Length: 88
Image 1 (tube, rainbow, N blue to C red):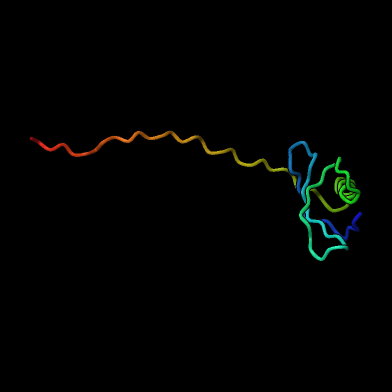
Image 2 (cartoon, rainbow, N blue to C red; image 1 turned 180 degrees about the horizontal axis):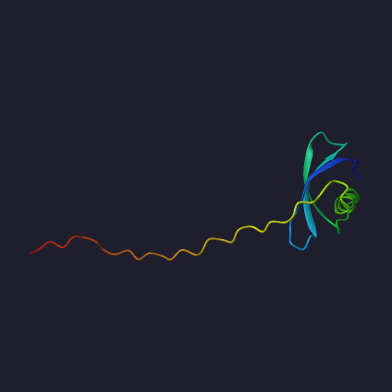
């Protein structure tokens, strides 16, 4: 298990609130680690982040924002021959 120094930037990753993302800093590493957290993860340090995160110990978890819908499908254009007609 890793020793958690701090956890920031919590954000729900789905509307059901079953997964959140965050930045975690562990004592064992010099860098911060982007992490995805859920209740069923088998690792103890991830479970600890889930429990404390959902209890509000790391602050409010930002609400999920659905991605924008994809743009409508484009209608293919038909190429028309525009060669000028020359009189004969």
